[in-house]
Length: 304
Image (cartoon, rainbow, N blue to C red; front, side, top):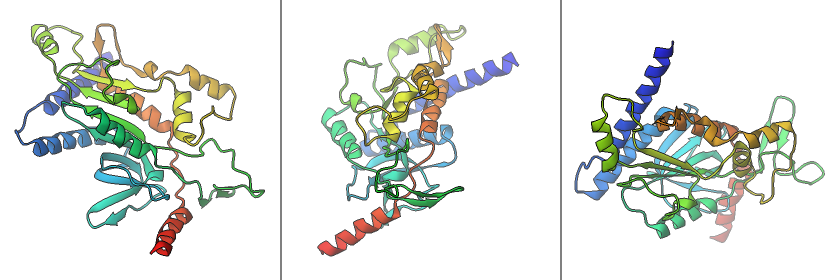
């Protein structure tokens, strides 16, 4: 059994190295072709690690019921369980923010801080609506108001997409040199520097610290923060809830999900556990607020 576990770990390390190699391969001098090629690699990457309940779309826009529209999103990871459609305008797709779990921005060598901040801000301005009505097993869920007119005290009051930056720097970057990376919740860097390659070639027959050259940074530290950030995106204060379960979430760190030891890292395998654990903290998508979008379209008609 131990051999099987070791083989699985080594297989993911091999996949990690292949991913970095493919992303760093110069397919052409044509920037748009190279960008599309690398974007497709990232699509395949996320398609292999997220549950099948999620769909993945390329080159889309995210909208909300307040007529806000994001900048173009390279990759959107969204759940159609409660949002079984996408708004279309010809070939252009608009996905309601209530369905979106994560948005991905793909960049190659250079980062433009102003562009990244503008893109991230266009995501942050989107607001989910809880004006939803759904029949559940034991009662009718009315998301916007209670019978007495007060707000619901549900844990999930609003959500927002996880912002992910996929970047291909020449060398591993320093966390204090942001260049706009601080605007993202997760930064995935696929660097292929000469030092790591020399180390790999020199010690090819030995167990080395070479881990495929993926560096993944999380803005959040623990699962309690994740729960609050993506389920109460409309609130600035802490979760209006207490208890042992929530205290345990504070103790459970994202770093606890790393696979490896001091001399060898399995960054890709670690990320699969880390990212999917985060997704499970927002596993129930927002019920779709049909009336809010009806109002949006009708308000636009009145302005004509």
